[in-house]
Length: 352
Ligand code: ATP
Ligand code: FE
Ligand code: MG
Image (cartoon, rainbow, N blue to C red; front, side, top):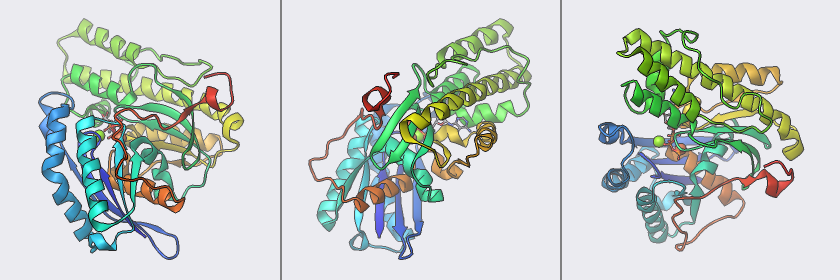
């Protein structure tokens, strides 16, 4: 089975082919990603109109290249999966119209994939993980702790009440004059910093619900930065190290609470999974590996190229759905907002 995956929901244009071999092994046969970072860098964030135009300009070439690299033609495919949201409407439409057109022309099944569900299922592509598992999904637009019980069966245990973690990294980077996207820049600067020089808060620590709040931490950092301005390189490094350490402490504490809640919602987890662009952070990975180990669980985090937005995760989510006979047709809508997990209150516990 060979499935094409198309991703255009944010600032990466991506196309990939994932195959499932006769023996059941999943193989990524191509994974083409074109980042628009350069186009948006001057604005310190993603500009929706620029993003949509950039997707239009490169997507057809990228799909052709994904097929070429995999030595396949359109006719060889068993399905076409495309991210139909959530994300920026212009970009989503570019990908969705392309996917629908290819599916119609080649007479192939179409799967309209939820981008967040694709992040959530990536651990099954890379590690063949069995359900259920605890997912920490942390990206530029989302921060959630989710019990992944099956394909299409997700219970949200908690999430951020303000900024997403990746967003907080991006804002801190901008504030300190570092580049965009901020996550990798802050992580790099933090390497030569002292995490204990500034006493930054750990919002939500110890709270009973596994929720996050990042905006107070970001504000505390801004106040410190303004107090000691102008900043030397060492100041920036220390602020980054302090911020990253605070985020890691908060995440570990929130995951601890989510692990405690998990049993009542989904039974015993097979693993702790970290997904989304923030899962690329080394300090966070190390802390979560240690924490998962103490809970007797493996930490499963996708290899770096599969942490951020990519086409392989969309193709894989398509395969998961196709196997269950779940397909879509030409009427599938673009969904800029599209929650993928149900609230816990809808599922069982009164504590939402
Ligand atoms: P969505 O939220 O819809 O999935 P997105 O494009 O923001 O969209 P990703 O591409 O998964 O999501 O992640 C990008 C985010 O991850 C950015 O905010 C970026 O700063 C953050 N990020 C990337 N690398 C690191 C890192 N090493 N440390 C911390 N954050 C990182
Ligand atoms: Fe994403
Ligand atoms: Mg992105």
